[in-house]
Length: 190
Ligand SMILES: Cc1cc2nc3c(=O)[nH]c(=O)nc-3n(C[C@H](O)[C@H](O)[C@H](O)COP(=O)(O)O)c2cc1C
Image (cartoon, rainbow, N blue to C red; front, top):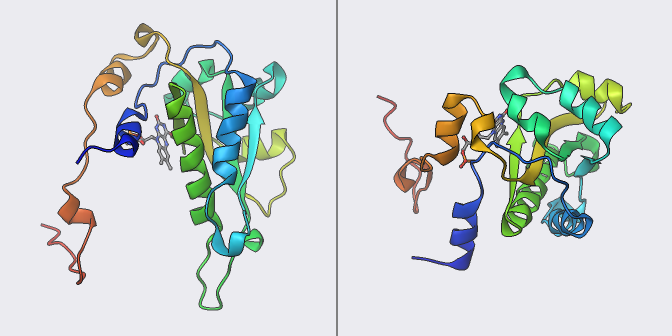
């Protein structure tokens, strides 16, 4: 079935080349509003996002990126997603919801970026301690993700493997591997 929403999800860019031209402030604002409209446990809204869009702050963010994420250095905006457990639901049986809710908000932010034709790619490949030191983030926070945001740039600035990955079709498991109706059955790992 084709829906406008599935189309938006398919357009979420796998592209890594990012043009340095700035992202319009009103578009950035809309992305933050999209994140803010996310569901969260008891509406605790535990997500915190640190938006880097000025030269000095951006440079500090770029320094935290691992070498493999060299492509994100041209992004005019880096958005750091962070939270801490005490900001969200913590049922007595040990479940924690802060990272789940941070992820929901990050996804909404990225989808709004997609609607604007922006690339918004999340990264685990960064050094949280570098971010923590640069922006005086308390130890109680988990600095979970950096999202590189910007308009699509020149593919030739990328290493060959990233050029290929940027234009390759998306790969996903068949639905049966991840979704179950009415009974759960762990697939045969062989
Ligand atoms: C938590 C998380 C961490 C990721 N870290 C990186 C990263 O450090 N560098 C990178 O290029 N892509 C990173 N990605 C992007 C994934 O590689 C990408 O989403 C995945 O391969 C599926 O491709 P698609 O997003 O184009 O559908 C990350 C994605 C997530 C959700």
